[in-house]
Image 1 (tube, rainbow, N blue to C red):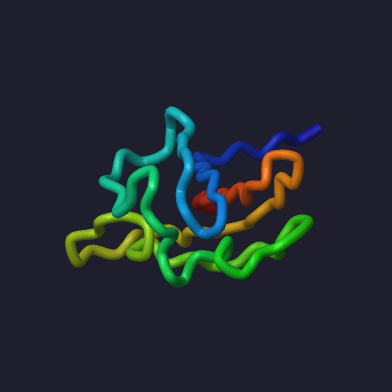
Image 2: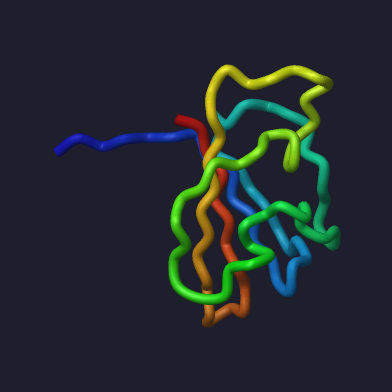
Amino acid sequence: MNVIQHEVFIIGSENSVIKWFISSDDFPRMKHKFKCGNKLPKNALANQHVSGISSIIDSLLDDWFETWGGKSERDMYEQCYSAEAYGQIITLLWYL
């Protein structure tokens, strides 16, 4: 069985407000543009997601992280999952 591993950043939000976040140890160390209690970036998929698992979309690195005018050499992706038992939307951000 092939196991694909990705560095991942995970965000929990409720009513478009960030409640918590965590990243894998191998996710690039970048300054993020948000903190707990802030609204999600306006382009965040979680602002529109209501239930189930969303499709995977291309995500703009600059929406989430400081880039200082640079561009990542890899594409960032975003997917959401509705954790209805907790009333939260879980957002996954990762690179391929």
